[in-house]
Length: 178
Image 1 (cartoon, rainbow, N blue to C red):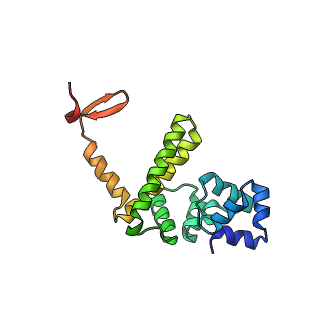
Image 2: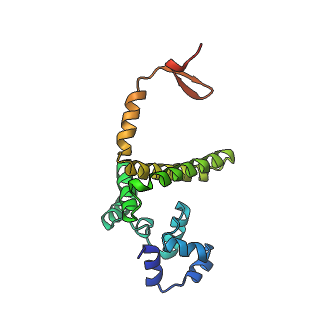
Image 3: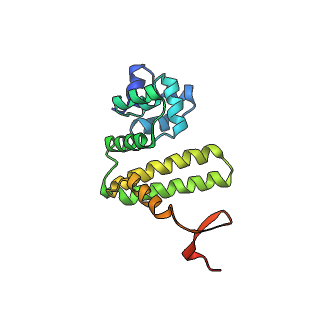
């Protein structure tokens, strides 16, 4: 049973009551509880505040990780990377069979960041950047890559690259046509 449903039942609250108190539709709460839809970050926070539990606990992160988050209140990129992989594994999301669907999630999040940038919506951009990282980490796992290794390899390729920044975009030396 996912923790959203578990916490709600422990507190003996109906979905209708949660919806009335939080402003989240009953239908959406039901989808979250059945894991048919993933809440956005601000929704996780709203529900965690409502239930008076840590967000990490409500998300179903492993207890040791929840304790670690509660103790430090900040995680390194590597710790977040591992937490996301564990979260996705707990939901049976990581599988080579899911690669094309996970790629579509990455593309969907890219569209959301474009919308946020176009509308100058800083919150949407921040949320979308986080969502893009999550979807990329899961996609990398589907393809049996470690995203941190990919990032390290990319940095090693670009760190000594020469070129010019033109209109805010770096163009490598071999692509410059002067």
